[in-house]
Length: 316
Image 1: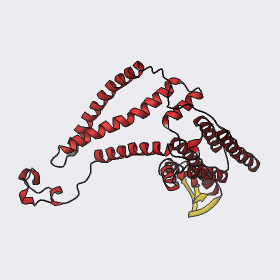
Image 2: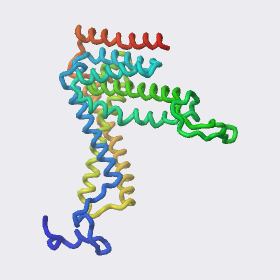
Image 3: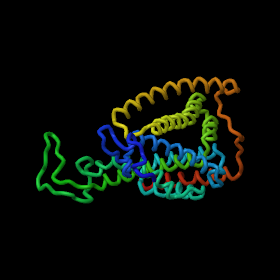
Image 4: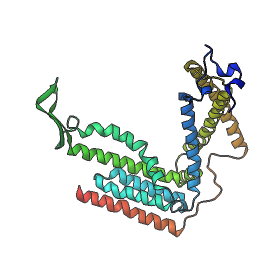
């Protein structure tokens, strides 16, 4: 690295004549805008990685998208109808087995599921495990007040405890969310987006809904890429650290610019699609064709919710 004496003064000094911390080798902190755009860039990379997973040779990748969609919907219905929490564990295990058979890393799959919706659901359901929210049989008494505690017309009782009914209900909700999200993620990872949209049209999903989904999925990443280019261009022209006011001005102007570009782009893209014969139907490079293995997979999959729902009725 060149010595500081060879650097011009305007590059190494701030407005007050002091040294810039980044010129002295210290790590420059990222602004909130930088962290946000980096996170959005990661979203784009995850999308590309998902398309690569859908192109692998695996169990679910080889199933006809229509049959796969029917099977996943059946499993999702079973997850929503089961009333016993431990019967959801075999259903979640089925999702993990299918992920492994589809050549998806189990650590990647579990991390992708558990780091988002289930943890959020756990935070929401946490108060329900206490007796002050959901009375029931004490499973663990956290504190005994020794007397009846009253807060106006409301009385939480004489002790604070975790109840059996609360833990049971929380476990049921969390496992139901985990299983449902896992099945949805598995379907999205093993099916190309255009094939999934075409499968939706087979089941008479309205054309306008499919069109909006396809356009949103395609061009949200394009707009994210444009936002990243704008930020990179600004950063490459900056000499010193930016202030919060400058970041806010940049964010406001960038949002206005992206809004204008997205409006102009939507008109241009739609005109180009219509001129090429687009009529609202998603088109893929290959046609769907069911095989005996697809129906065999669906038949074996139907047995899982049937057995679990039957056991749930017997237990409940």
